[in-house]
Amino acid sequence: MDKKRVLITGAAGFLGSHLCDRFIAEGFDVVGMDNLITGDLKNIEHLFKLPEFVFYEHDVSNYVHVSGHIDYILHFASPASPIDYLKIPIQTLKVGSLGTHNLLGLAKAKNARILVASTSEVYGDPHVHPQTEDYWGNVNPVGPRGVYDEAKRFQEAMTMAYHTFHGVETRIIRIFNTYGPRMRLNDGRVLPAFIGQALRGEDLTVFGDGSQTRSFCYVDDLIEGIYRLLLSDYSGPVNIGNPDEITILDFADEIIKLTNTSQKVIFKPLPKDDPTQRQPNISLARKILGWEPKVSRQEGLKITYDYFKSLPEEALFKNEHNNFEKYIKR
Ligand code: UDP
Image: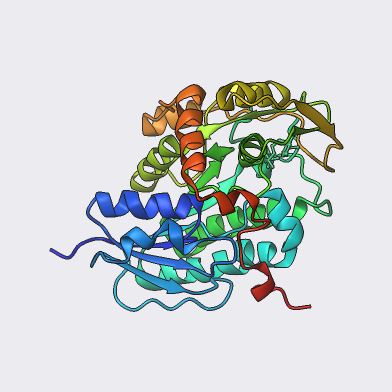
């Protein structure tokens, strides 16, 4: 029998590269695709020698061609940090909208099942807490986060339309804050920001008064949830995240203890439209996937800290690790 073949977009990114590893371990052939705008080939270089893996450098906002059969598509290409989508807002909108459209078209042509990576950001600054899948959200379309949030909301609508109108098998995952090895140390998100600051001997920058909350999920738990959702028969959106909620100020204290740094917290202005609270309600994932997170924040942070410590010294002081300039047309 032919092996199952999966196309993973955003393959050189944080989540995409972990997905490549998982699907290869499960016996799939993997086609990785990435335009390397925020991804890094280092995340997948260990796969290049494997016959089960091929990689294409391509921007999925443009027409996507893959020869041969494809059984599954996982669309994980997108800038995912608020700092990134401020810098590349149009690319962010395009990959979530045009990119999704291209991949849905490919799924239809190949008779493949497609899972798209949506986000807790579809809930915006939520008025329902914890967030359930039936909450429609509170998003500012013209705010700085709008380019990501609205692209992902469009993505969900387009995915449902392909499902109902064309009968394409679709899955939608709403991903909450996730962390682990292969995050970019300088991507601006809170966990790499705090750990990077501790490692460089800088104070930890808490935005606002630090009373806003997030709920952090370790990457292995998330990948397990994605795997189960892909193989399930549920086509509505499903939250995957860890409900263990913490304020950003308490989180900074945890990182100070973890890294044993003598630095302290300093306060900086809160970015516009920064959500005040976020926690996934995962009852649906528990019910239909039998899934719940297994890795505590204490365990996950330790693994992630060890990863960041193992990076070469220059990674700590690099301003940005991406190819924005290559892509931005001025
Ligand atoms: N944050 C912070 N200091 C930083 C980076 C982020 O206090 O150096 C805060 C940010 O304002 C937000 C939370 O940490 O309230 C999580 O930010 P992140 O960028 O990781 O992701 P978000 O969940 O906002 O998309």
